[in-house]
Length: 163
Image (cartoon, rainbow, N blue to C red; front, side, top):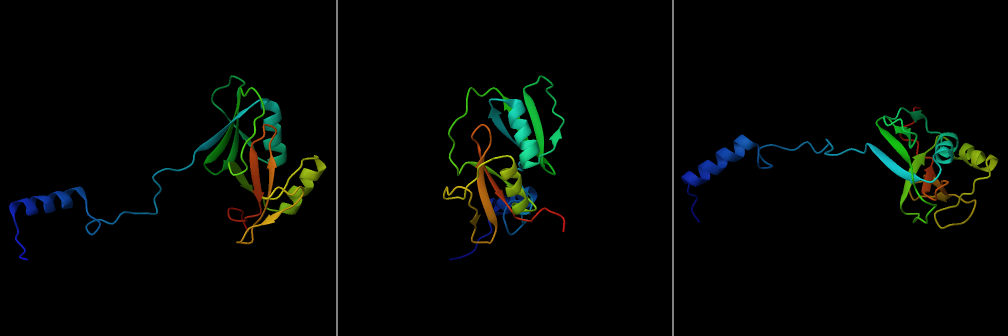
């Protein structure tokens, strides 16, 4: 097999160089995300009840929301993420546990005490009431539902908490 340089091959090589095509010519920075999570929204029956739960039980601070029409509460969930509660659901629904939001807390024991004090039930991943699951990586987790039936995982993963 002979290697011939043709005008077509030269033209293709020039196009690849000019456009940055080809992995060997320009490596992509795989550490830069092409999309990041901005917010999650939950459609709720009782906005005050849902907001109180997320603020007082989960511990999320309320942040400014732009609509100012009494149908939204925004809560800070991370440095650049938020949870939007939106009034309008016609009723509590059944949801799958695998479709959930997960929050990490500094102390799972303290969180459980808060649940007990407020008479809020929780369970492990298998559904055993009042139990906690330990994942294969050692993280402990429990599961509960918010006032609208959305599932929440609460765990003690310490990533993101200052030492």
